[in-house]
Length: 337
Image (cartoon, rainbow, N blue to C red):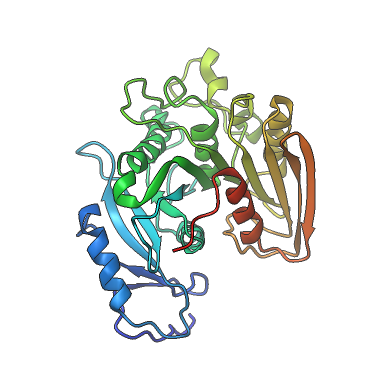
């Protein structure tokens, strides 16, 4: 494990071995503070001193409830150092992976991506959702509904978060990529996990899919449990694309042995047929489960934006820049502090 960099008078430090930069600080012990305390916690964090080795720290408020009483799932909020809650910023919901049976909102990938986006100025939330056996009918579509609820929670608390409720994106990796696509492409009222009586909309303005499954039939998973045969297609993101969908960014590595590149290619083809703005970034040499700084050699980007073909490439595998450029186009660039 890397030696942890020393900090002066900091709150609880979150750092994971070898991967997560030691720049995520808990604003409060998990589960012991809510949004009402957020302004004071941010102000207190501003008074602390951080070493020059830890520029641009990101702060996290962990284990906030967002589902009905009795549900154990929680979400985490990420904000950049010095955040002014009076300035409305665009937001991003990140959804963790884990094959629909495991994973957590604070796993390496979730915390790394969330910190990167928060550091860029976005209001970032990372949520948990219903997990269970792939044969457990009670999990579907509750997992999708939980992610929609996280979007609704963001809108319901937009004032406290300093969030622009009209500019929310959803992102996720692997199983989370699938869920992000379902939240973004299927109807938030009538689609799987939708709630026609919801007080707040779960619609989003952009989707980031990181190597997610888009067609279970071609992935070898089989049917969604508990769903009638004539409705199985409604759970396939590649079958949900239509002209009213928000722009989509897809990230996938050529060395992924868990989810085949074909899954993303199916999604790209469906988006192209529907005339949806989309960007497809293929990272040469990247495996499954990467953050915005994957191992690999390079990347290439193709797609269509506003009816025009796009194409670019990089001689490095890092995808943070291309992801932030996509978000800037889709939901806007965060305002200065």
